[in-house]
Image (cartoon, rainbow over all chains, first blue to last red; front, side):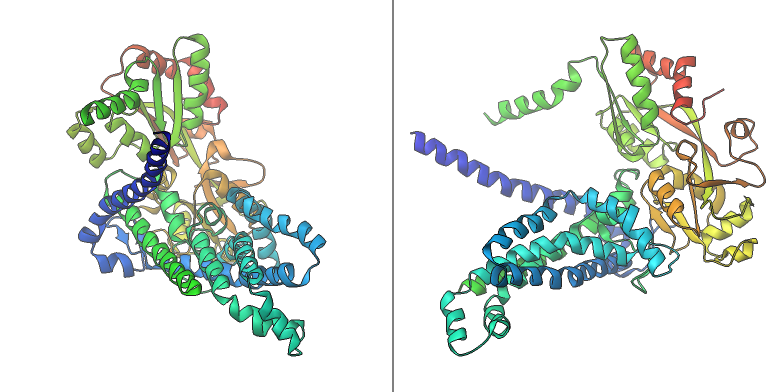
Amino acid sequence: MKDKMFKYITMLTAILSVVFLFGIIISIFTEGFSVFSKYGFFNFLFGTSWHPTHEPAEMGIFGLIVSSIVVTIGALIVALPLGVGSAIYLSEIANPKLREILKPFIELLASIPSVIYGLFGMAFLAPFIRKVFNLPIGLNAFSASIILGIMVIPIISSISEDAFSSVSKHLKEASYALGANKIETIFRVIFPSAKSGVLTGVLLGFGRAIGETMVVLMVAGGSTAMFKNIFQPVRPMTYAIAAEMGETVVGGMHYSALFGIAIILFIITFISNLLMQMIINKGSN
Amino acid sequence: MKKTLIMLLALILGAGFIFSNDISITGSTTVFPIAQMTAEMYMEINPDINISVRGGGSGVGIAALMNGQTNIANASRPIKTKELKIARENGVDPFEIIIAMDGIAIIINPSNKIPNLTFEQLKNIYNGKIINWKELGGKSAPIVVISRDYSSGTFEVFKTLVLEGDKVRDDALLLASNKAVVTTVANTPGAIGYIGFGFLSDKVKAVSVGNVMPSEETVNNGTYKLARALYMYTNGKPKGEIKDYLDYVLSEQGQQIVEKVGYISLQ
């Protein structure tokens, strides 16, 4: 009897997550769908002018999508070498003692609340970037990419490290037995067999960076102009939703457009998750 | 079974609202400090009444009023026709009360020596026709145009009073709060921005507009044109403790609080 109850209670908790997921999907699709039908799906997705409160409203989100992708790729460019590099060092090179000290620090990076990253970016990094590159403004895609990149480092680092550590010992030893040195072993043996793990880390980092809201809100600058260069202020999708939702007319076209952006963002993260699952499944086969 | 479950759920969710004499206030972040301070002072005088104040934004507040989730909606802009229509459809009749005034100051970096801008110049800076401080008699440097977000009440006022139907230039930075505008202008020599009077500090420099310095006096005598009213909305004419609280906000004590948190009292 007790066993059965426990079974049903845990089952209920598991089902509840599914309920939450579908609840969220259904509500953003119902709220956001009217912008597709009224404004036109292609006008909405590929329009380059975002002036939702102007008369007449212009609600093209292509610039927002490009901004999101730019800062996300920028973040991965920052995080990939640092994350993978630290993972190689921790799993293959560092002695166990040093590793025990360094690892918690990298993991600590992941536990810093994003608003603190944002604060740091806004108050220190942005003015610094402005001076160093002699720019009119420090709140731009470049600064946002750096901060997002730092946030993504622990994700890529810890997942890559797991992947490196789980490469079979026999493989490594076989490589050394054939006369390969450490560097050759890392790049020719360990790295190829841990590739899917690193890729998983990258995709997780992609999801983290593209969905991050607080940091871009504080550091990206929020201008709606089409992306031309990395030192210009940009307005990623999450920025527009967070900044514009509070004051807008609930049920209006602008409101629906913000849900429309949420749908697009959801689809992008859904695809990246799907890719990740495919890689993980392929890796385990 | 299902019915009782739903009833129970509705009861739990509704209980806090239906069975108490509490007043709930929701809405504009600009009005929030006034609501918060007046609510605290009011509860000190009337300990048996509990007022809860939440932010969220003007749109959120008005939506909550329409759905009967709040007693008072704070707004930094007048209610829109569309909102009024939806409210009436839901059987809610929004009643408007102006509780304070707020001036909008034009700010630049303290290193910038420009003392004054005309409305025409401001408009052309924000629509993108003037792009360098040189054109205004300053040093040659690109103007970094900083605006508030499209749906903010402050932007709404600025759009109506300054832009007069023009679009704000595409590469303007649209920041999410008054504080973010102050920080950015303080850190950026070429920047120009606009904020509510309550957020002025010595880190930024306010310029006069059309040769009128922004101040409480110039807003009150009507010479400084960049000003707006702040609102509270109730469902129908306020009654009972809601009326009592609103009377307090409009009283001399309430208006002193308005001044204290940095806004302009009604005269």
